[in-house]
Length: 446
Ligand code: EPU
Image (cartoon, rainbow, N blue to C red; front, side):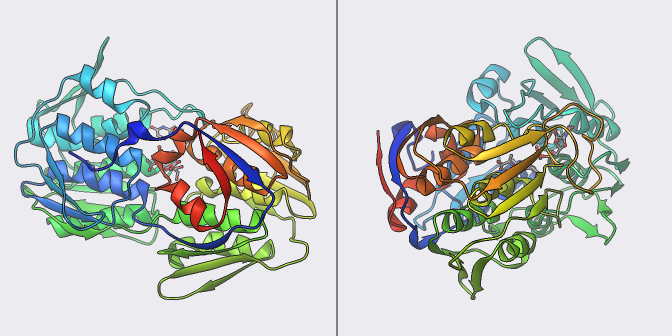
């Protein structure tokens, strides 16, 4: 079993804000790659080694799910290295999967690999989370296109493939990250060729493609969001160092900006963060890139308000939006945010209002990017008026990224804040309390 104990993690902290964060922290493998790389192990018929694995509770959840399916997992002597042996993959009880997975969407990604290995997959019907409905209709549609039969039962979804899984021609209605991964994880061992159009091309997906290639897959990524996958009958193991977590890196960069601080993020890479770096520079933040990481700091004086729109890669990723909004409360003038990926990712702003931020949300599209929510009734745009003098408050974390943003707000605010529900933040921010120490934050876990 795995190595760190999430049960001991605190649920609240008390924090005295109003001082610049200064220091060095390190980011390791990206949560949104590591969990998928672990799922890919189920496709392999040999042991795999994954390096750069962060100690976050999402990894713990996926590890538990894999163990329920018979995958043997050990941590090696080297820090952040997992050895995963899928030789004896077996069926798990859906009630156990449900109890273990919580709100994680990883079980749906196990469907293709389990169908290949066992001819059957049985998963709980997955709920959404507070950032939007997060349905799995695209996932089930593509699985059906490969030949899977989905049987909805009271206890969950049972999938079978009576005639095997066959390569397919698939056009996604939206470049969904998870559905693109679903197609990759199913097509690599399906019979024949799959053509996927309108695919997501996030760097984490390209890293998953790299892992699958190491395992023996044949995948070509074209320039027009088209991915072609030639199915192969068997896949071997892999040894891979996960791409670093650009969401975590961007979150700490926003903490530096919002607190007028200076943080060196070891492990941060320029290329996957180009859209973020452009925004950071436009707003008036400074950064310096070297071979080991990126230093982010507040340039002094006023920082600029600006208009941002989230989008699929290579656009500005939605997971940077929440920490950026907190930094934008400290800029002079009006900033505009248009969230085009999730219909409901601005709910976290109401607590910021209680801390003194001036943020108004709107149903209209305040931006020019094509948006699926233009005629729907979702508060998916916001205007932030700054600079706001934030004051400490008692707040409860709403979701992972909103939660880290509350930490940033509390760090930037004058006075004391109590932040509850911080166990959600451990899902995606490794050892964040140790990192708070490293940048000089004044806080206590309670
Ligand atoms: N969508 C559907 N139907 C589906 C699948 C998606 O309507 O079957 C919609 C979603 O509701 C959403 C949009 O498509 O509005 C995009 O969803 P996508 O499938 O791209 O997201 P995901 O795969 O569920 C991953 C990350 C998210 C990240 C998004 C977008 C993981 C585990 N999660 O989610 O990360 O925001 O891509 O980049 O990789 C986070 O790390 O905090 C997080 C939420």
